[in-house]
Image 1 (cartoon, rainbow, N blue to C red):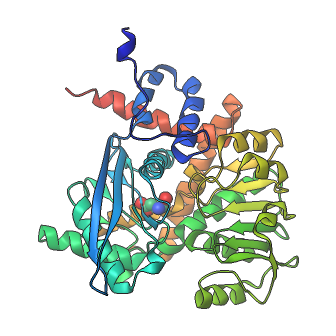
Image 2 (tube, protein in one colour):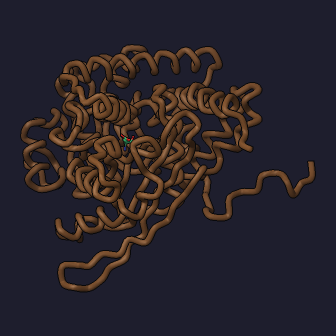
Image 3 (cartoon, helix red, strand yellow):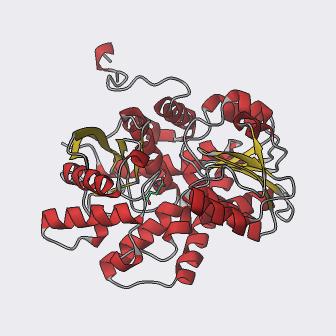
Length: 429
Ligand code: GLU
């Protein structure tokens, strides 16, 4: 082939080995040997189908005008409409949103939801905005990305620093612009607006369910197990609560407000009340404060990174005492750290299966919205557990068969599904 016709790296991003897109590309490279004839389509996974960058101008309460950079990336739509959250964070970049969208493609295929992968974000610190400013920003952003989202094309949901109220504003804005009541355009909505019971805690629940199954397989007793959680938002707090209920001790927690430790385990009701009042774990009276970096040295059996990407570096992977890592966050482990954890015999349940509980209940919400028929919380949880356990078993079999990590096995199962759809649909024109 003429060498100028071989795929060239994307000009829009400059990934490094540890950056989110660099991490994702490495994860794709590792799965290629297991894709058989489908490997011919792999380049499709290494570039987003569509990436939209929007300007989000709003009038601040004091009359000034502020501009924010917004993104919506649709990584792959072979298996269904785009699906994935929206995050509001000062570190959001196109590269990060591309990686998060790609991980959604893999995650949705891994649990066999009929979705492609997408993600959005605004580069903003939402803590600096008033409620009215936050609403105006959310509405303007929704209007700007309105040209590519929709109940049958791309369905946003909550992610870092976004919540049911923000989904309500998104649903309303899209509905106003289209002259409809489009409940199916976003998931993670308030219950009264077509939200699903069980959605708020679903990601944390999925972390617990996959973690319990993984612990069983490596003979790690949950009763008395020591758990360290990074990130005490929607995902980390719900997972910690379920592990606590199963008899484990939550001995360390870290978030943007600080790091805390209690050798006997936290009183979870007290900690939850403290976080509700103070917005984070820092200053909790039922624990000792700790230097942030010491979090990674804590004597624990289970480590749950449930914050942002790139947290488990090679150096931290060498230090951790955990036997089991449950990735509540997206992309928390860089590839070099992944190798060290594998060499040290530390089992990692990767993000693309571990935190898939959220999008799984998002799927239930979307289905319920279309049929206008709603399930009980028990029905949701039973279905969620069944899907998560079934998906994890299939991944585990693949890992055993090829003697590969659970991450590469999840990519193998998911990429086979995505690329089979790609091949069956054929290349247009
Ligand atoms: N933001 C969540 C994730 O990273 C959920 C996405 C969704 O429900 O669409 O998986």
